[in-house]
Length: 215
Ligand code: O7M
Image (cartoon, rainbow, N blue to C red; front, side, top):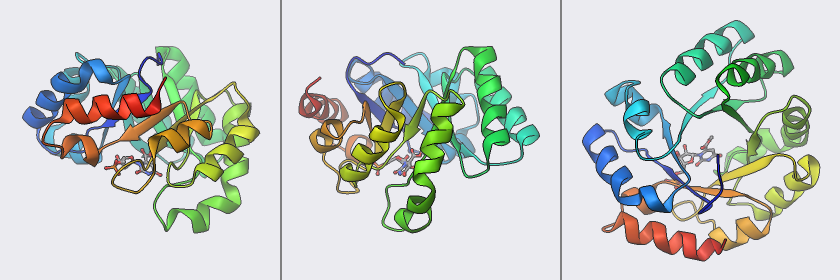
């Protein structure tokens, strides 16, 4: 993914027409559109190619299964037109490798969740976050997902992966994180959902976020 604005919109709406409308409004302000279960379960996998007309699509399926199943899932998602897939790391090295092997065939990206942004996300993730981040580095993932709600953790995880991997960071706005803080802590992109898609003027809100990042 090319870094122009530093913003990824999380398209957690459940209707294709809303998603397309918002995508067309914010396209010039975002480097990617993240889609996940809410939209895909509602409208089908074809949302990926539809939204890819506006910006590269990252499929947030938090893939977490045995290697064979992970491979089958990633294959479907890249085939559907996604540029990247978000996967979990706690399933182990072989599962992560299966995802990365598929991504390489499609010249795609794999982002590994290292620690989640919600309050409950700290308890079980923090004790293993360093190892997950190291594994993502070792196996050649594109980047990790780290919490904008805890910039100090983003800084710490950046120190583990160095400059070679990207950090994409959700939790700005509705979850309380501040864009400039998390970029300063070492994130390359912020992921923002509700603040944009619930806004009266999604484009204006996206522009304000981009200005706040100050890339
Ligand atoms: O800005 P929000 O809070 O409306 O949306 C944030 C998006 O990021 C939403 O799609 C979440 O599912 C996702 N997300 C988190 O909020 N926290 C995490 O720790 C991880 C993710 C995510 O994208 O996982 C890959």
